[in-house]
Image (cartoon, rainbow, N blue to C red; front, side, top):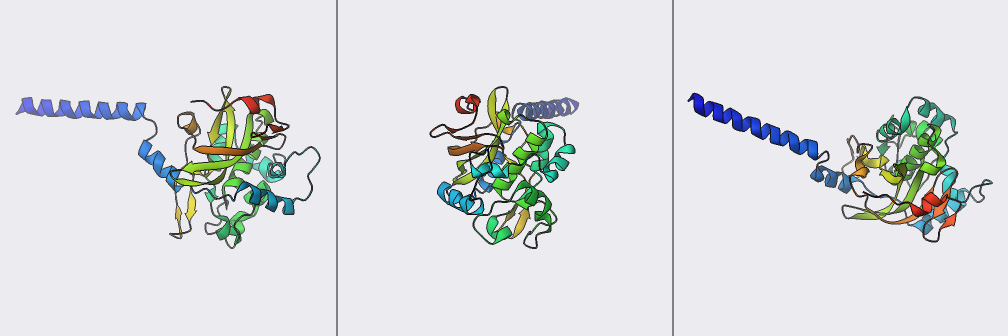
Length: 258
């Protein structure tokens, strides 16, 4: 009896060790990753519709700006500076961003597409009557991407090393326009997905809680971009399809590599 008890305990110990090794070697469960991708809902209109809307909102550009997209990256804004002062480094800025809640423009604004400045996003959306998760900071992908880049710039990241990306993505069969962030890490561009945190499910009329991807998630996973329309921040802009804009050479040459 004692012999079989010892053998049974040994088998359990070996199984536990093997399981522990599996999780050490597999820091992100693929099934969970696919679930997160399916739940992330691309929400931008197509590129021309975006340009038309921003032309109406901003008929003229500030001196030194190449694109109206750049007007939504505001590292010197007081709300952005205040929040950045509470954070230390890129990882903390990102961890703060994935606590924001994705809420669709039709729910929050009653329209298909509306861009807010980082100031409006951080200061005003928590009190919106139409915010289903108030007093949480809430909006969709472009606000989260623009504000995260603004935070990173306010925290001291050089304009050469961080950017918003606009383009088309395929998240588990959900194909559409999207905005995300890329930060330069070890000479490569690494995506950051601010909208991997909580989101409001319009169909189910409920909040879906998620903790968001780790900061370095996309150093080990492919980002599902299909095409890129624009890279930008408060200083630089690049249309990668014809290399127009004032972005540095590193923006034109470097691509994220696994």
